[in-house]
Image 1 (cartoon, one colour):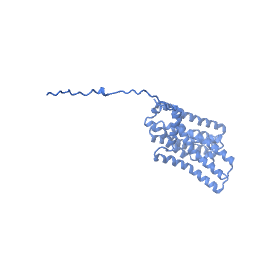
Image 2: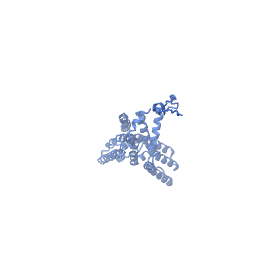
Image 3: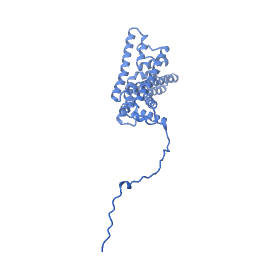
Image 4: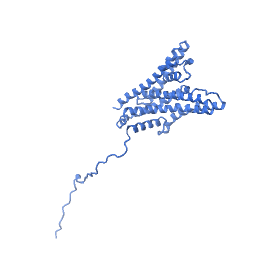
Length: 305
């Protein structure tokens, strides 16, 4: 009896096994937060980064150490004033930042490159601009974040001095006036130093070069101006002393607060600018801040292409 044999079935072609399931296009139904949210997020992230928050432990050491060292003299002064029942604080509110300017410069040198150099090194700036954020948003967020970080490190010691003065039962009106004048002074200082630090740091993606350049600019300018002022004062040219102060960031701030905030000048001989001369100092400070902002805008328009 013959057995009927069925022919072997050949495997189906690869294309016959493929299927397209049309499940339809689903649009995004969530909230669109836009540029303002992106700008705020970049600001808060940069501000936290200026103190090492959200980063490694090693990144927190230097900013927190500088913050503690900035506050330590204020705490000591307060303790002495309370213990000895002093009639006034040993340092004016407006002069505290001038005395501690070396530490402020070191903080700017360490944190300004951190704010912008990594974005330049890893070429992430164009990625920011591929989102709703624009060049102006990026620059404003970074500028505001570093200025806010500087304001914190310079204003908190003044708060310590003010609270200590009230605990020592010093005159409330005089202390409040001096405290507010000091806040205005450090606000201008924060904007100026932040702008200078960011402009220098945005030139190079290498953080080490940025740190060295910021220290060099702030230190050399202050050293040169202080030397020339001392020479002019020793030679009896006291009228030239205030004008020489136009060529260093810290002496510019000293001139503004001497002319408008009733501060005692740290210039040699205590000769600061008059109110009329102070207008030029104030315009120079505001012009430098605006110039730094403009340079940062030009720089990041090129980088973002």
